[in-house]
Length: 250
Ligand code: ADE
Image (cartoon, rainbow, N blue to C red):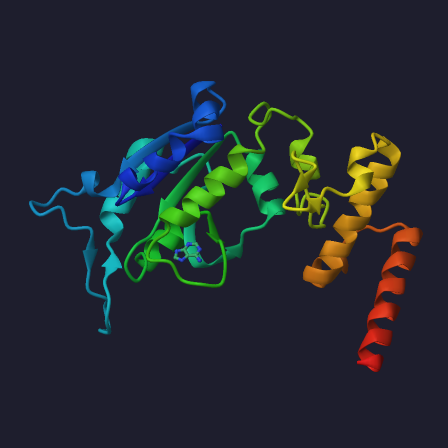
């Protein structure tokens, strides 16, 4: 998969994309990442990329010309791949969106700075807008890295365990079960006996129950949308009843 990233700060990507799983995916040709500095596409003496907003008010707005020049200069006009603007006004980024984007052979990520980009970029160049959460960052770079990371790890061959993405939190609409590794006892805190039992049936049942319990405790909004067996629904109803009984007794 190919990523073209358009930004005023290409250097901030390197510390992240040059290490660990993303670096390995790049070395193996599974992910190709090209960084483009929008400032390189300015034609004026001072390489200006922003200007004051029409209508007044504070802040600066990214000018349309360098952005169009950069994106069309690299990808052609019109670009044939999705051009995604990272913005707090975009559609919320989720694991489902990561899976959707991982189907594409090529993505362009456009990182805004300052108060944002000239509206004509959104209207006539951008084909999708993504937000990584309801908070405002100083620019789209961190958001682009989040998208890049979540999508790259889903590409076939990137993770050592091909089944790993299917087991992740959010993959099946639930949070994942807890994990333990050696030592079996640390400061007196033991690894649950079931995980050391070697009984794969019991382990799978325990993990599923833990996954349900965590989701029930932390993210009931996810549970409402998850596919549950009648037995699992019954289990949750029992937890609910227990919680209500405890609340009455408290
Ligand atoms: N740029 C600034 N804040 C952002 C956010 N929450 N998501 C995506 N891009 C952004």
